Length: 546
Image (cartoon, rainbow, N blue to C red):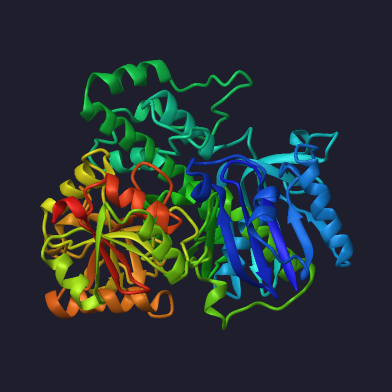
């Protein structure tokens, strides 16, 4: 029995649960190659899937295109499918879905759940906040910070904070756009809030603090979209000098951390949770998540692998399966928490793509040992294999890999491959059992969602994956997460003594590659040295470099 979840807002996606276990999560941007795509996810599902016989339930949101007449033709087709199968359509809340994906993906049987983003519609009776914020016509509330308790297969809302009270997601979007001229979730360039976070490590947070202090919590934006932050002045300052940009970013980041800590602390003190789950786009601020390990010692932290809105289709499906249909939690199936929920491509599909570019490439047989040695020889390797990752982070199946022990590797990948700002950091993928030896906290970070400081002296061994504040946004890798990737890193460790490789997403200012054709396109237009189709032992180089 299958449940299909849809999300047709920005970051459109659909997901399929088969007897409670996710089997597919497809993000539209991976296929149409436009970041943050807003489109008809229902038709996206109908176009990509073939067998609808087992689809009994469908689930979406009030703004998901299925109930506001926007995509009625597609909606009617889906209605017929579930009617023929004796099923039902559910409509649930935005933050309800975020909370469900975080909790039901985790292996915690009990947790405090916090969602923070730029806003979404939740249905409420007003008992958890000031009723004046409710739209009396729809009985709906625009929320952007919510608190939940999760226990076994149930979620219970604790508090919903309306958008008019605090909206960190919108604050960051406005600052990213109005001060730095960078893209947000509304922009085809993609959300570049991470660039602002990256700049903060090079700045003095005190220089512009007065322009942000106490201004992210008091209704920053009025109805006209203007607020108490002096965007014009800060924009002028940012354009004068690169260091000013860094300093402004640092002030924004510091104030954000202060606000998040103040939001969470009362609930940590009241409920004394052993476990904390995070979701919503603001939880992509890995620096703040890393600070939580210091703020709340002893608490296990789990970050939703897809915390931004593409994860809503997964979360809503999980909510129906567990909370509504009362099915038990799934702890013993690695697919339940796996981020590798995209398509796996056959050898025939790979070969077809290779044949179409045969005049531009050279192909040889290779194995992991050969590729590891090639990487040690200062070559940049792109890897394609297994199911594509859900989420913003490439986690070994659609990745660009390099040897982190050479300082110049960072500049080479930024300039020759990713074509992005010189200061942008790269992530270390580290074998899980070695985290305690390299970082100050022995924490799980399987989805690259936590930034931590290196232990003293350790960062010097891997300069290509160290940010300017001696931190890194690490990916901890275990055999249960990705056996191939774990073994690959372990081979590198055996040859170098370093259990870490540099990992960045396989793309160039575009969504992460999805198909073999995308992989070849990106490989051929950048200065990546080799493309490794690792499932089939195929190593590709550029013909003109022979």
